[in-house]
Length: 160
Image (cartoon, rainbow, N blue to C red; front, side, top):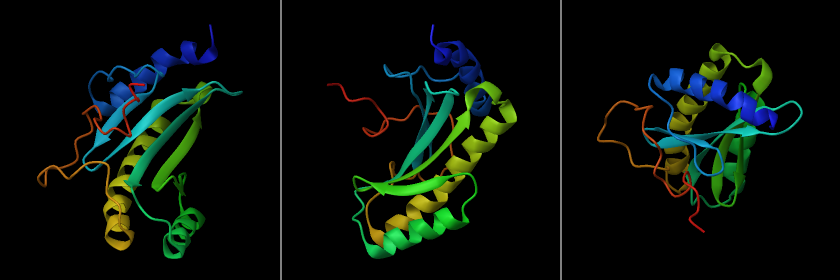
């Protein structure tokens, strides 16, 4: 059995605690999808030494590359706290990794809140400045919901 499979039930429990309900079932690649108002993120266990928990969010999709955008992302990386942000395939991605074997609830919950709040804040700002769109439309001004399984094509597996 791979280390990731040994760690998986613990990670599921931690994500469920953060969501305050049972964790959504993983996709066929073993990833967990979490929706947060206009954004969403993926949690996956990476078989590496040590085993990692990778969390990432496509903050903006369909955004054209520009010098201004790259300078802004570089500035965010230079001044950021625990997350990195980058442009790939016309998507702005926020990401972080945590060491699974030493991960506790406080650390995972902090990373979830950090990623979710950064995505919620940065997504609409980047769209207003540089174009593209957030992963989801805002929910009629509703407060952030943390318990919905993401339905965006970018957050769900390809049927192929």
